[in-house]
Length: 220
Image 1 (cartoon, helix red, strand yellow):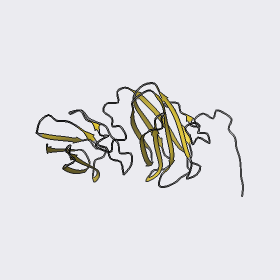
Image 2 (tube, one colour):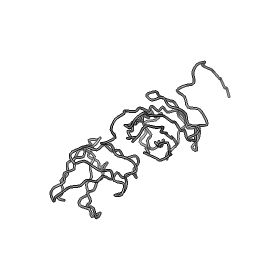
Image 3 (cartoon, rainbow, N blue to C red):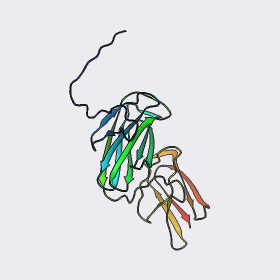
Image 4 (cartoon, rainbow, N blue to C red):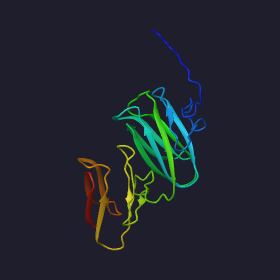
């Protein structure tokens, strides 16, 4: 066989370093600047750290080497105490948003998902300072950890995996009709979302399926 090696002199910023598979060895990210990484094996994990100076919204823009509906990459967002704030699976270009409640250092870990590729990806992290109201928090997958809703105010959520459940709660002060306005990211006749309405005892008041914007009314 034939091997040819070339070298381009210059800065190594913008590329991950190995090993960067622990919080202590995480590569530092500059907000708004892409970093290029590559999973060297199906056991590799690439960890990046960044700092924000206020509460707000963190956006992870993932530039995949593939355009696949299959899950090749798993991205996790953690806080400085290593608490997982969100998890995402993808095989294509995706942008993910997560609310962060305070200033501090945060970490993004990237590993293989169901499938593996060693092709290079790019990750760009941005932060918008401001209120975290109006964004779901994770984990919010039980009645006990449900995110509170303000009546008449939209809440933005995102299913991180096919097994994710987002639970919200609201309080009404009298019997009447509850109206759910669901703003779908799709306009599909297929059922991408299923949502249920429950009372405080866990009784089901209604189940609904949709792949597009829908308005539901139920007595409560």
